[in-house]
Length: 110
Image (cartoon, rainbow, N blue to C red; front, top):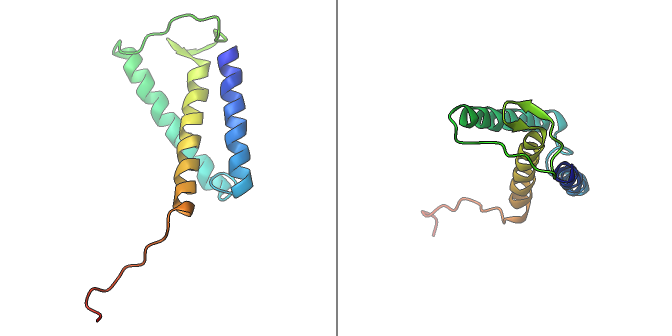
C-alpha cells in the first residue's frame, strides 16, 4: 500500500506544479488527458507484451496493495506509468518555456 500512496502523492505534487504554471493538463485539459491516456495505454500494452514474453515477472511485496489488474500486472504499475507520462509532459512543456526561443537567422543578410 505504501508504494501506491507514494505514487498518488507524486501525482498530486506534479499536478500542483502543473496548476501553478499551467504547463500541461491545466493549459489544455482535453488534449492533455488524451495524451496521458494514450501514453499510459501504450506503456501498459508494452508491459502486457513483456509479461506474456516472460520478461517481466511480479513478485509479492508487502509495500504493494496486492490488487492485480492482469496476470503479473499490479495496480501500482498503472499509476506508475500514468505518473511517468505526466512527469514527462510537465518537464517537456516546462523546458519549452524555459529554453530561449531562437529565431531563424537569414545568413544572406549583411
